[in-house]
Image (cartoon, rainbow, N blue to C red; front, side, top):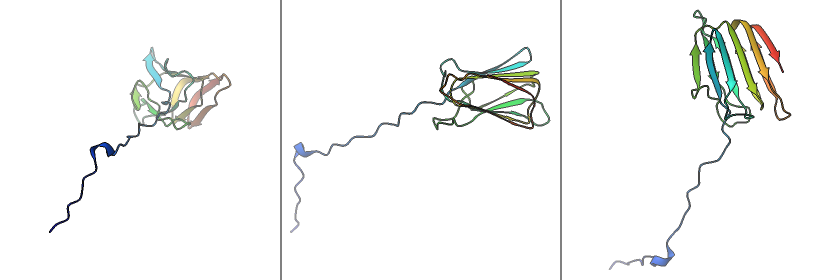
Length: 142
Protein backbone atom coordinates (compact mmCIF):
# COMPACT_ATOMS: atom_id res chain seq x y z
CA UNK A 1 0.00 0.00 0.00
CA UNK A 2 1.46 3.39 -0.94
CA UNK A 3 1.20 6.54 1.08
CA UNK A 4 -0.22 9.43 -0.81
CA UNK A 5 0.86 12.95 0.09
CA UNK A 6 -1.60 15.71 0.11
CA UNK A 7 -0.95 18.59 -2.23
CA UNK A 8 -0.98 22.03 -0.61
CA UNK A 9 -4.26 23.88 -0.82
CA UNK A 10 -4.61 26.28 -3.76
CA UNK A 11 -4.54 29.30 -1.46
CA UNK A 12 -0.99 28.65 -0.19
CA UNK A 13 0.83 29.06 -3.46
CA UNK A 14 4.50 30.01 -3.38
CA UNK A 15 5.05 33.54 -4.62
CA UNK A 16 8.46 34.84 -5.57
CA UNK A 17 9.88 37.98 -7.10
CA UNK A 18 12.46 38.22 -9.79
CA UNK A 19 15.08 40.89 -9.15
CA UNK A 20 15.25 43.75 -11.62
CA UNK A 21 18.50 44.52 -13.37
CA UNK A 22 20.76 46.84 -11.44
CA UNK A 23 20.42 50.53 -12.22
CA UNK A 24 23.61 52.43 -12.91
CA UNK A 25 24.44 55.63 -14.69
CA UNK A 26 25.85 54.85 -18.08
CA UNK A 27 29.32 56.07 -18.96
CA UNK A 28 29.40 59.29 -20.91
CA UNK A 29 29.74 58.96 -24.64
CA UNK A 30 31.80 60.85 -27.17
CA UNK A 31 31.28 61.95 -30.75
CA UNK A 32 34.11 62.00 -33.27
CA UNK A 33 34.36 63.36 -36.81
CA UNK A 34 37.11 64.27 -39.25
CA UNK A 35 36.57 67.66 -40.88
CA UNK A 36 39.11 69.36 -43.17
CA UNK A 37 41.97 67.33 -41.70
CA UNK A 38 41.04 67.95 -38.07
CA UNK A 39 39.76 65.11 -35.91
CA UNK A 40 37.24 66.48 -33.41
CA UNK A 41 36.46 64.34 -30.36
CA UNK A 42 33.78 65.86 -28.12
CA UNK A 43 31.48 65.00 -25.28
CA UNK A 44 28.14 63.78 -26.62
CA UNK A 45 25.35 66.29 -26.04
CA UNK A 46 23.46 63.80 -23.84
CA UNK A 47 26.58 62.97 -21.78
CA UNK A 48 27.34 66.36 -20.27
CA UNK A 49 29.03 65.94 -16.89
CA UNK A 50 29.31 62.16 -17.12
CA UNK A 51 32.65 60.40 -16.92
CA UNK A 52 34.37 59.52 -20.18
CA UNK A 53 37.55 57.60 -20.91
CA UNK A 54 39.16 57.25 -24.33
CA UNK A 55 42.46 56.11 -25.75
CA UNK A 56 43.79 57.83 -28.85
CA UNK A 57 46.50 55.82 -30.60
CA UNK A 58 48.16 55.75 -33.99
CA UNK A 59 47.87 52.58 -36.04
CA UNK A 60 51.42 51.43 -36.91
CA UNK A 61 52.62 52.07 -40.49
CA UNK A 62 49.31 53.58 -41.69
CA UNK A 63 49.17 56.82 -39.72
CA UNK A 64 45.49 56.22 -39.02
CA UNK A 65 44.14 57.19 -35.62
CA UNK A 66 42.25 54.63 -33.55
CA UNK A 67 39.86 55.78 -30.84
CA UNK A 68 39.04 53.19 -28.20
CA UNK A 69 36.46 53.67 -25.45
CA UNK A 70 37.75 52.71 -22.02
CA UNK A 71 35.93 51.93 -18.77
CA UNK A 72 34.87 55.13 -17.02
CA UNK A 73 36.58 55.91 -13.71
CA UNK A 74 33.31 55.63 -11.78
CA UNK A 75 32.70 52.07 -13.00
CA UNK A 76 29.58 53.06 -14.94
CA UNK A 77 30.62 51.27 -18.12
CA UNK A 78 32.71 51.69 -21.24
CA UNK A 79 32.70 54.96 -23.14
CA UNK A 80 31.28 54.69 -26.65
CA UNK A 81 32.47 56.79 -29.58
CA UNK A 82 29.70 57.42 -32.12
CA UNK A 83 27.91 54.44 -30.53
CA UNK A 84 30.86 52.04 -30.95
CA UNK A 85 33.62 50.81 -28.67
CA UNK A 86 36.32 51.78 -31.19
CA UNK A 87 36.73 53.67 -34.48
CA UNK A 88 39.57 54.26 -36.94
CA UNK A 89 40.03 57.54 -38.82
CA UNK A 90 42.40 58.48 -41.67
CA UNK A 91 45.52 60.33 -40.53
CA UNK A 92 44.48 63.78 -39.28
CA UNK A 93 46.59 66.93 -39.39
CA UNK A 94 45.15 68.16 -36.06
CA UNK A 95 43.33 66.57 -33.15
CA UNK A 96 40.99 68.57 -30.89
CA UNK A 97 39.49 66.85 -27.85
CA UNK A 98 36.76 68.50 -25.74
CA UNK A 99 35.86 66.34 -22.77
CA UNK A 100 33.64 68.76 -20.89
CA UNK A 101 32.86 68.22 -17.21
CA UNK A 102 33.16 65.00 -15.23
CA UNK A 103 36.04 62.72 -14.34
CA UNK A 104 37.46 62.25 -17.80
CA UNK A 105 40.48 60.27 -18.93
CA UNK A 106 42.29 60.78 -22.26
CA UNK A 107 45.19 58.43 -22.99
CA UNK A 108 47.32 59.52 -25.95
CA UNK A 109 49.61 56.69 -27.09
CA UNK A 110 52.08 56.90 -29.99
CA UNK A 111 50.05 59.69 -31.57
CA UNK A 112 51.47 62.20 -34.05
CA UNK A 113 49.76 65.29 -35.41
CA UNK A 114 50.77 68.88 -36.15
CA UNK A 115 48.62 70.10 -33.28
CA UNK A 116 46.85 68.14 -30.53
CA UNK A 117 44.61 70.15 -28.21
CA UNK A 118 42.77 68.83 -25.19
CA UNK A 119 40.16 71.31 -24.00
CA UNK A 120 38.73 70.48 -20.59
CA UNK A 121 36.08 72.10 -18.45
CA UNK A 122 35.93 71.63 -14.72
CA UNK A 123 32.90 73.00 -12.93
CA UNK A 124 34.06 71.67 -9.58
CA UNK A 125 32.60 68.21 -10.10
CA UNK A 126 35.39 66.36 -11.84
CA UNK A 127 39.01 65.67 -12.46
CA UNK A 128 40.54 65.68 -15.92
CA UNK A 129 43.20 63.03 -16.54
CA UNK A 130 45.12 63.49 -19.78
CA UNK A 131 47.97 60.99 -20.11
CA UNK A 132 50.58 61.06 -22.87
CA UNK A 133 52.96 58.34 -24.02
CA UNK A 134 55.28 58.89 -27.00
CA UNK A 135 53.05 61.66 -28.35
CA UNK A 136 53.97 64.85 -30.17
CA UNK A 137 52.10 68.10 -30.80
CA UNK A 138 50.17 68.28 -27.48
CA UNK A 139 48.64 71.30 -25.78
CA UNK A 140 46.19 71.28 -22.89
CA UNK A 141 43.81 74.17 -22.28
CA UNK A 142 41.50 74.43 -19.32
